Image 1 (cartoon, protein in one colour):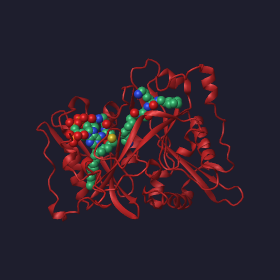
Image 2 (cartoon, helix red, strand yellow; image 1 turned 135 degrees about the vertical axis):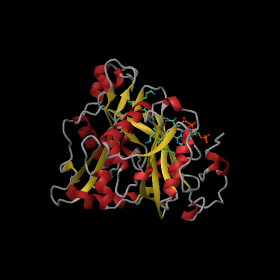
Image 3 (cartoon, protein in one colour; image 1 turned 45 degrees about the vertical axis):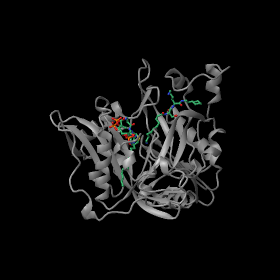
Image 4 (cartoon, protein in one colour; image 1 turned 30 degrees about the horizontal axis):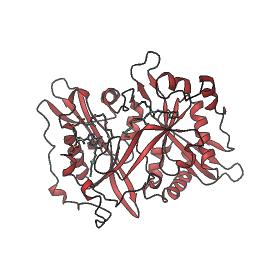
Length: 388
Ligand code: NHW
Ligand code: EN5
């Protein structure tokens, strides 16, 4: 069934019933001297390329590879369109490794035809904080599909991660592989219902007219919570404290310090947005919410080329009810002209999705760990990790 994945240290479907296997590493680290020293061989026409994302021309090539060949929905109506600025943000966090930005190009034309990346992260599973790689942006050009190139890319990134003495990884995918630690659903909150219907992202509900639908999704012009404002550099310490205390509640979550929070949560126009509630009386930061910007190309539509989507990221409520906080997030996203606000059913998101008029999408997101077993998996509500 899975000629490649059967050979890898991941939960195997055949072990699912075996409750005697312990949580933690599936196989022990090997001495660094035993990590293969040279890159895996590629078909003769191709070569490896370690990518320099500070090089605007290379970044443009990566952007274009992904914009034309990355993830689509099951009916091929939309394709993720990560911006160059987003890719730079996603791939260059604190202490990133340039060797983990791995391209494949055609030797003759120098055209970039495939990519895979990792970034370092500390991820906690129960009480175990583990150095991991977050693997993302695996992409093979449409013309080179089904030639078993993906396993070569995965082995190569694994080798380069091992060279840094890191033995575990986290990744998500829309497809089922051996074996998800949990499976989440995407939920969608219409902000611009007319456009969403026009492009086929959503449909007019039964017994609904366009004007009733527009009215259903109307939002106030400005956030309602007193003290709600954009996060600034001076808030990093307070946000880190809030987030660390909150993420401690989940079975699997990142272990963020202030350096991480500054990178992952300080607002960057059209990349990541973060807001908080500062108490008008005490000036204490009590609540926090964030989303990242990931447009999708609209395939085959005469009127619209892109959908502007916000994706719920990390949210913490200690005083403002989470539902009210997220309503303010919807309001600012609407102000900023997003067409839709997306969220997964991770963390405590279930508590506001229906009430705030999110509807379930047709897509799922499976979460995986490499070389780390979590017996019986976890529920989406036990997961405190959002990957980009
Ligand atoms: S998920 C998004 C992945 N990208 C896309 O879907 C873009 C569009 N599709 C493509 O570009 C987020 C191709 O279809 C890809 C497969 C490249 C997906 N993850 O080359 P072959 C991520 O980036 C297995 C893992 O012939 P292809 C996360 C498949 O099961 N494996 O297929 C990435 C089969 O193996 P099997 C996937 O269609 C996490 C083999 O690939 C996969 O031309 C990576 C077939 O290869 C997927 N999304 O190319 C793992 N899709 O055993 C990281 C297919 O079943 C692991 N496959 O025969 C950790 C590494 C680090 C460890 C460190 C300690
Ligand atoms: C790694 N970082 O399928 C990511 N998206 O529901 C890789 N559906 O947008 C893995 N099919 O349901 C990504 N509209 C896996 C996801 C791949 C992309 C994907 C789904 C998620 C999606 C939309 C459009 C469907 C178009 C036809 C969808 C319904 C929205 C509706 C709004 C009003 C209330 C009810 C729901």
